[in-house]
Amino acid sequence: MTSPESPAPDDASREAQTEPTGPTFADLGLDGAVLQALDDVGYETPSAIQAATIPPLLAGRDVVGLAQTGTGKTAAFALPILARLDVARAVPQALVLAPTRELALQVCEAFEKYASRMPGVHVLPVYGGQGYGVQLSALRRGVHIVVGTPGRVIDHLDKGTLDLSELTHLVLDEADEMLKMGFAEDVETILAETPADKQVALFSATMPAAIRRISQQHLNVPEEITVKAKTQTSANITQRYLVVSYAQKVDALTRILEVENFEAMIIFVRTKNATEDLAEKLRARGYSAAAISGDVAQAQRERTVGQLKSGALDILVATDVAARGLDVDRISHVLNFDIPTDSEPYVHRIGRTGRAGRTGDAISFVTPRERGLLRRIEKATRQPMTEMQLPSVEDVNVTRLARFDDRITAALEQSDRISAFRDIVGHYVRHHDVPEADVAAALAVVAQGDSHLLLEPEPERPARRERADRGDGDRPERGPRTRRGPGVGMATYRIAVGKKHRVEPRQIVGALANEGGLQRDDFGAINIFPGFSLVELPEDLGADVQDRLADTRISGKLIELRLDTGAPGHGGARGDRPRRDDRPRRDDRPRGKGGHDDRPGRKPRHKKY
Ligand code: AMP
Image (cartoon, protein in one colour):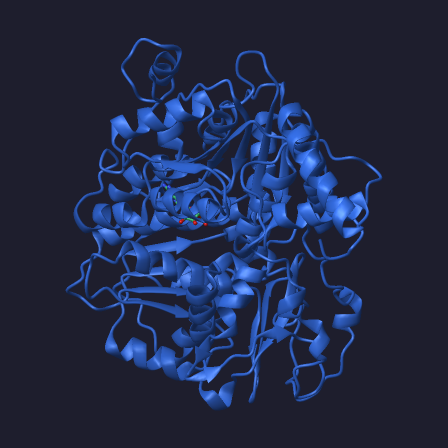
């Protein structure tokens, strides 16, 4: 028996020893409460940008980091700030400037997560569109870290409500985006109003001349960090990606498991906690799945890998660390449920398939915001990935019918049992005057039990243009920055709470995120009106999420989430939101894995089977 980190002299462990293990968070100089919080959130190892950036930041140096969303850049700057924070002094010691409200909220949430073991640390988001009241009272009470959009930060500086005289850390996050959005002058003004001896960290996905100029003028001999990428991926591995919102990932995965012809699959997630979570969800849907992470005891890991090798187990949900060096020929598919933070872990991950001269398949889930990271990985590996579509209900049903046929064929091969049952069926036909085909169909019903063989067709959704073409109703005028229409894969939803219920965007994000399992990445613009609010969310929220949100309340009021059609003052036509009974049933998932030829041309007719 072998394991990824076993010292036994087999192939897997030989490879494990040659693959770099990299530093731990403690090796980077982090300790105490920050380290504990990282263990709570389940990060096992620093991402490449974190490994390169945290030590110089802890040493007090300025840093310019070339990094995109998805690389772990937020923790790269947040952790050293928290490690160096003086909690006893409740004055703004760190300011993070971000181009959008969504990013500012996301960064705030990250700080709060990493500061969970540091009682008394206050982080405040400040962004346009939110009333000044909340921000002012929080500022008066005292905050340590301010995360804001440049425009609103300038407003506070002008009003004298934000004092940056004690600032020790300044971060420019997504600096190139801030310039693109016309914030160059605001950023310069803010920089000029902060103490000269502060530490500055600048993060940007690209390095245009304007950013270089800011860096030269305002940063003190910065350490420039670009993470070098390992470049080879094996040519025998087909690489695809699916753009999917965070909330839709589990549904997307179950469809893929149904239609992909896989022998064994490793599903990669980012955190230790997510391994068990996802394995549990898959088991609940009838798949044999196990989780391994750095936290699972060695003996248990060896057992699990042994089961994967023998075929007793088909799906392993793993973190990078746990799967390091794993060498199992049966692994036909690697699925990146969370895209890795960089090209190097990507190359390691997909190298778990296509072993022993076989071909392999790699599928990566990419949220709309992570597209930049995808491009970066493609560039580093010099291999473009092919975009795939979410398998449709029809794709799933074609596979289910093929699998049903296969079961009949396999049963027919058991000739002894067939001939015994033939007598029973013949007896029934003679005594009940029923055609044999009907008896066969009745037996299929018996075999199928209460679950349905096929998924129900997806409800028709109104075309995007139709949804966009709507009256103004009681909406306020919107400037170009607040109202550009939902982005790709996003749709506008209406909830029945608004200004008169005293809701703030944070409450909306908090409630939908906590109850619907949505992530910050899933939120677009939020517009609050007197009686309702409009929230941009992923177009296909998934049945699970809609079910969970059906009972959600904000300020004690049911939110009645529905797709917005723009009908003035109302929630729009009822038919816009998939009716509950139109959604695919959850309880009719097949047991076991997919793996059947899909037969072109075979279209399931939509009857009840
Ligand atoms: P960011 O690039 O900062 O937007 O981070 C992208 C995602 O990676 C976030 O969901 C983080 O929680 C996650 N993340 C950041 N660092 C790590 C790490 N070292 N291990 C696992 N996940 C991480």
